[in-house]
Image: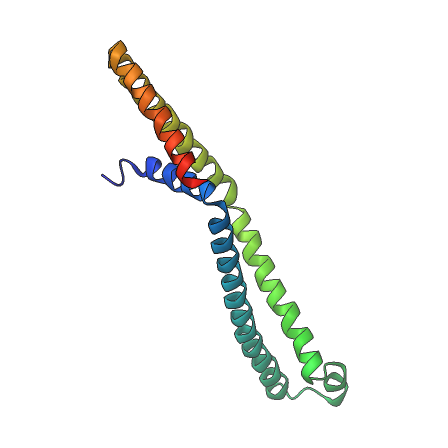
Length: 154
């Protein structure tokens, strides 16, 4: 039942989100803030991990004084190494992800068109099956629902 009417459920949720715009904007703002906090903490954890790996690699390889001077593993230098290593990893991940985006876009577009055609056909068949009195009653019910909804929301 839910899988069959998932498109209608999504339309209802989007409509409610548009009607309750202020609440939706506040919830999305809080969610974005939470997401950035989580991503920042994950970045810090990854930075500490890469920082420790770089530090241990320099000590394990017994680099000479010249290389140790060039690549001083103090706080700032270590952060620079870590930043570029993490940005390289993130860049590679985004590059690999970009290979899938066009296929996902085509799939979602195809699903949307098929859903639109199916629901439009259902609505047309239902409308054609109604008598004139039932069509008028349906339009009056829809109009009064919009008026009452506007009255209660404003």
